[in-house]
Amino acid sequence: MTNILIFRTARAADLPAIRELVTTEFCHNEAPTKHLRNTKSGFAKLYDRFAAHLELETTIVAEEIQRLGGVDKQQKGKIVSCHVSIPLAANLDLDGITEQLPILRLLEEVSVPFGEVLKKRSIPESRVLHSLLGATRQEYHGKGLYQQVIGALTQEILKSSRWDMAVSECTSPTTRYIKKRKFGWTEENFIAYENFEQDGRKPFAGLDGGVALLWKDYRDMKGKV
Image 1: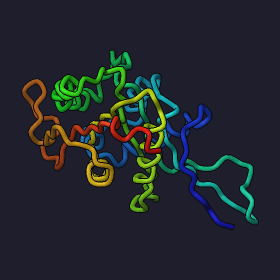
Image 2: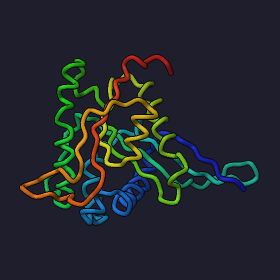
Image 3: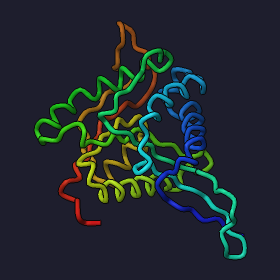
């Protein structure tokens, strides 16, 4: 009996498992949400606002499937890592979100220079994919799964005629490293958690690290799949 990992695009049937994985891992293991002591129910409320615009074709899962006697068992596998994408131009409804307000304000601030990036490159917002967030089960950390997930995401973007660029606000140093060093994303901006102020206070005081704004222009790579 062996286990295999399959990296694929998400299906509608995967959405509850993706939601559970993301909300659990972000509240337990993501530095800014842990620092703010965000509750799982509160983060799930925010996630659901984004997930209303989730793109199945560019949302990637790593699914672990058990093989018995060389044949895949028929029961559904376990999703152990995932990446969620939405259109940057999605009309988000964030009214009533309170727990994560400092994080949202921080993401807004780090993203300010991106408008100039689009202007210089003559890319409309409608052609930009928002590489929103990802998560890996804690017991699978350190196995390189998320790098393979981003690799699968890259292939889906290259196959699509819909997207010219992707953008991401990276709150995790691991994701920042993978996108910059392994996939050649450009870092446009960085704000240290310690330096961010909201309404005269520093909600992330004492927290190391920060959030980075990264982007990748895929136009010159199209056709290489």
